[in-house]
Image 1 (cartoon, rainbow, N blue to C red):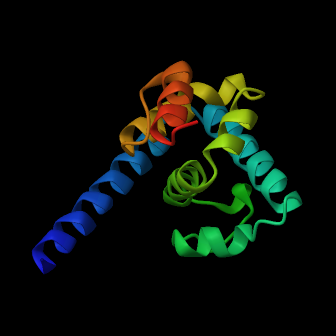
Image 2 (image 1 turned 30 degrees about the vertical axis):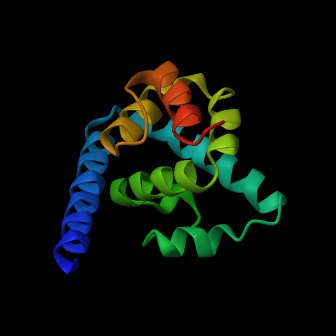
Length: 130
């Protein structure tokens, strides 16, 4: 069984790399919109009593300030928030149409939804049974 775990770790690393590459190749204004979306999601979760710092720490991200995040941190944050709190991610994404395309692309590269904003929202909700 240890080989199975190693394969899972490798796949997760590939997924993270793909999502980071999508983020790095995005237009600066799209990345800025995405940073705003993540800030809103984290703010809403914090207001609900979620320990966002701990959640992001588990994802390997050392800051909760999207303006200080690298492309890799942005990708890891996006995937962690979508995995742990898809309902909040979807709710906030509906208010950030400018970030929808990049969000869908990052989650698509991360295996957590389809490409594009509509695909992301439907894929994200379907994946998590919402």
